[in-house]
Amino acid sequence: MKLTLKIWRQKGPKERGRFETYQVEANPHMSFLEMLDVLNEELIAKKEEPVVFEHDCREGICGTCGMVINGEPHGPLPGTTTCQLHMRHFRDGETIVIEPFRASAFPVMKDLGVDRSAMDRIIQAGGYISVNTGAAQDANAIPIDKDTASQSFDAAACIGCGACIAACPNASAMLFVSAKVSHLALLPQGKVEAKHRAQAMVKQMDLEGFGMCSNITACEAECPKGITVENIARLNREFLSSSLRSEAKL
Amino acid sequence: MSWFSDFLASSIGRKVVMSLTGLFLILFLMVHLAGNLQLLPFLAHDPAGELGRSFNLYSRFMTSNPLIKTVSYLLYASILVHAFQGWVLWSRNRKARGSQGYAIKVNKVAGANAFAATKMGWLGTIIFIFIVIHMYQFWLQMKLGKAPMAVYNGKEAEDLYYVVAEAYKNLGYVIFYVVSMAIIAFHLDHGFQSAFQTLGINHKKYSPLIKWVGRAYAVLVPLGFAIIPIYMYFFM
Image (cartoon, rainbow over all chains, first blue to last red):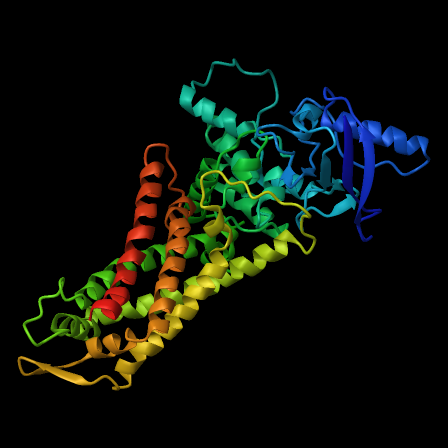
């Protein structure tokens, strides 16, 4: 299949970017990233600068890949990361517009590569639990209700790719933060830091310059892992109870 | 800063303020509508020849009762806080989104009213302008003593009914009023359910009911307000 690609090219964080148009011959069985690999091979052969894009596992579980394809983070297929999106979902002769994830807190480093370290700093602020070192305890030592375990697992499915932020008209990181808070808040292992976690993570989220949630739900619609806004409500509850109950000052 | 000001300055704290003031304004609309419906002759108990008696006595009660007066100051404060906080949200969110927009953007949402949800700031701005004009036209006229007086059972009351009836003779004003109600309907459609979500109330059992009640409220209340000037313009 013959495709026309309009790709955002930007030499560096301070440079002005613009769209460049490329023609590429792809196979319908290729993933979107493999199609870009083909383009880059051709660019390298022509001694041109290849297109920078991030990728790692290519199995849809690491959260490294991510770009806005025809106006949607990770492209048009619901519940799918860019690496798992296959070219059979596009038409022969189609023009595809590819842009980086955009938000003030996600500065473009080069082409389609953006700096998402703001999300790492939010995790560092409170997205962890304390565990004693030594031999692992028995897996079934702590009983957990099935519904609760499922809810926690659904939240833990968040791969931290940033598509929610890219999709949100407010560039809010609430779906990401809520998934991380929910995943830990629901389980007994997460209770130790629960009093401060939501406050600490929301504080860092605000410092990083992410927007505020106005319940538009674009994040849920574009999330490749099906994280729902019910988690945002849980984050709001956790934040409220943490702000009202904790005595320590953050 | 104290924990409370930290809370109010946080993104979720600001949203909670939006939610609580919004819910208070939602409740107020119902009270306001109950009063306004007395403008309609078939809903008011006006004796023959005393058109507007129910409405005028009601508005006299609302402006003189000390408890209601106190609540009315809370109402003015809520409108101002809601508007100011909305402006802060809008400007911070614009900054967070950044100056470089997308060349193509598909606006997919999961269950929200996409138009209302993304345009709350603009809808709110128009509603704020409407409130200013509305207050000038009715509330201020009465406060400045420009409304004529009517006498019921020997007691005087401002004839606010007359002021309203005069305003609704103007087709331009009737159109402005009805369009404003449509804008309030969109604002409410998103605002009602959004207020609950912000307070953390989202549950598989109850959220469908909240959304359903919110939509019904967003349609019926503005419709109730809009019917009054339309009826008065065409039939009175």
